[in-house]
Amino acid sequence: MATLTLESLGKTYDSGASAVRDVNINVADGEFLVLVGPSGCGKSTLLRMIAGLETVTDGTIRIGDRVVNKLEPAERDIAMVFQNYALYPHMSVRENLSYGLRNRRMAKAEINRRVDEAAKILEIGDFLERKPRALSGGQRQRVAMGRAIVREPSVFLFDEPLSNLDAKLRVSMRGEIRSLQKRLGTTSVYVTHDQLEAMTLADRLVVLRAGKVEQIGTPLEVYQRPASTFVAEFIGSPAMNLLDGVMQGHALSIAGASLTLPHSHQGPVRVGVRAEDLRAAPAGTTGGLPVHLRYVEELGSQRLGHFDCAGERLIAAFPSGQALSDEMALMAPPEALHLFGADGMRLA
Amino acid sequence: MVENQRWLNVLAHAVLILGVIVVALPVYIAFVASTHESGAFMSGVIPMLPGHNMVETYSAVLRGGVSSQISQPIWLMLGNSMIMALMIAVGKIVISITSAFAIVYFRFPCRGLAFWMIFITLMLPVEVRILPTYKVIADLGMLNSYAGLSIPLIASATATFLFRQVFLTMPDELVEAARIDGAGPMKFFRDILLPLSKTNIAALFVILFIYGWNQYLWPLLITTDPSYTTIVSGIKRMTDVQDGTPMWNYIMAVSVLAMLPPVAVVVFMQRLFVKGLIETEK
Ligand SMILES: Nc1ncnc2c1ncn2[C@@H]1O[C@H](COP(=O)(O)OP(=O)(O)OP(=O)(O)O)[C@@H](O)[C@H]1O
Ligand SMILES: [Mg+2]
Image 1 (cartoon, protein in one colour):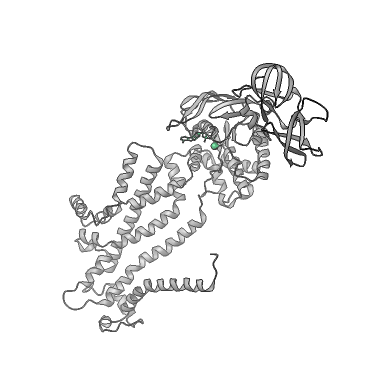
Image 2: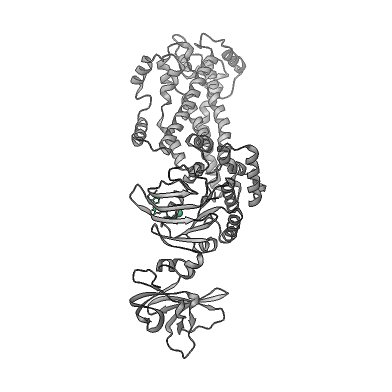
């Protein structure tokens, strides 16, 4: 059990590409931190630097109070679960689990105890003698987890461990990883590009963009107060609606509608509003946002209306019974609006 | 295997049978010749069925009772060939697997240069560099020795390339997982790379053993001491009779016997590497 500290961490590849820039994160003991971001934003690079598989070009990594920059992966007291599991194909499940322990010259009895315990936790006891080839994807995933667990490391590192599984299995494995991590209380860093996975797993979320930290916070904080239009569009499904508007003092005008807001600003803004915060304006009210219905997506529990609003796309979520017409008006409470400056950063 | 039309099956079988005949007929004739009396093949009509002399001929050859015809006891020649072929096959595999390991997994200065030097030797088989190689071996005092027979044939770029290709297909994550599991380079090589290359090693062993077994020119050149005669050059010597006709029945019997070890290697190793192919996946 340990904390993990990243201080002004940076990585420039030999090719000159800068993949990670000035990352500062403190991961508390036992915390589940999720790194999320679009493809190519440097999540894997960051994780692999922590693992020791990639050299650090700037800054320091501390596990507990040891600086580990120069240590071999095996000396860092970490365990990593890979996207494609990376099980040794010629070894049985038992050998796969125990290989790292045998390399550390651990006593046989202790190895067996740990393997059996991990097998019990992960319910892989029945196929300990099989080769990975004879396992399903989900079972391989468990074995990969088992290999991490038996090491009893200070930090677990996961690089998109669920992305090779089908959707249903992914959801159930997600729950298992979460409860397992809580039970073992091991500090964990988890990489994913799936925002839903990130939201459901994380104690804290780190949104990365082009190698830099865009926002750090609990899933709710990030969801409710995205720090930029980038985060606003990335976290949450459907993505947050963003419309162009102009503010003059407290008065906001967007797409022909105008509103009075609690905060004031001068000049053009991006206005964000979540689909679930939009309602149909009752007939006869003024000040609603005039929209044109393009199509409706039925989700069962709710229906998503896809609208055109002065040339921009807008999605609103309605209760399943709600009637929608081609031309209608939408409104949202002023406190549900997110304001972003011209640079995309949150104003208030 | 979607096509299942009758005539396609017939055609496929016809082609296969033709191939088998082309390959097997000379071998069969050699066997038939070894079972007849020595003059039978010179009589103008080549017999197509085995004769009655098989037991006599083979026991004579194996007991070394035809010393006037065979310069050395056949067991000695078979043994020499076996030692040479094994040294070449094992030596080539050991050298090429370690050099491929170095080239694929280590970043060292002049790595590119080393790679290209190995590559260039592809264009220099023994026959091309035979004179300088002979000089080197002679100067090192390795004429008439097993080392002299095998070492010059061991240097091989093809096998290095094969292993390099095999190693390049190993997923990077496997290397990384091993690093996290605390396996140093040699441990990784022994515990992971070698077992995963098992099938390739077996296949290569078969090819190299036969290559070594069939060597003719080089052994002929550097062994003057008859006790180092290999079976292939021994057979050649049997056909060089000063006066009179060669004893074809004995020659063919020795040829058939000389074929057995490579056949045994193929049969035995094939099982091993087919099994390996089924068992491992990367
Ligand atoms: N070995 C390398 N050499 C040079 N550049 C690299 C190397 N590995 C990654 N990069 C670059 O670094 C950036 C970050 O890559 P990284 O693999 O960390 O992305 P990622 O966030 O994990 O993406 P994904 O979600 O697709 O896995 C990318 O622009 C990539 O092209
Ligand atoms: Mg990645």
